[in-house]
Image 1 (cartoon, helix red, strand yellow):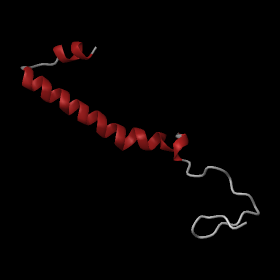
Image 2 (spheres, helix red, strand yellow):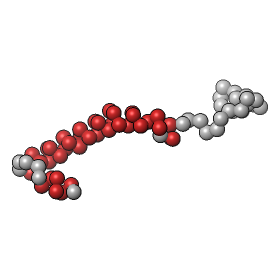
Image 3 (cartoon, helix red, strand yellow):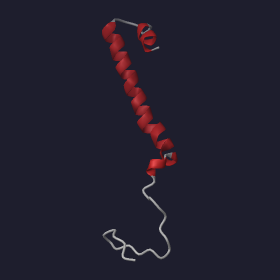
Image 4 (tube, one colour):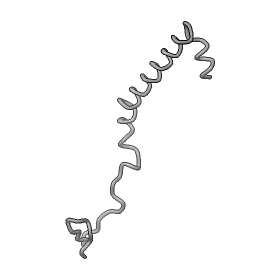
Length: 67
């Protein structure tokens, strides 16, 4: 598929390489600018909490439980 697209780009080799690099850069910008931020709330690895805290749990400022 990629070779078919590359063969159908206009111009000599250096122009086709430049067009390909610009297209890849545009795809990366769109992914990081709009797609990834839009789906980030739905990703499970964004949860920093391993377990839910229990009402009687007491945690010291250093993160070590004192209960």
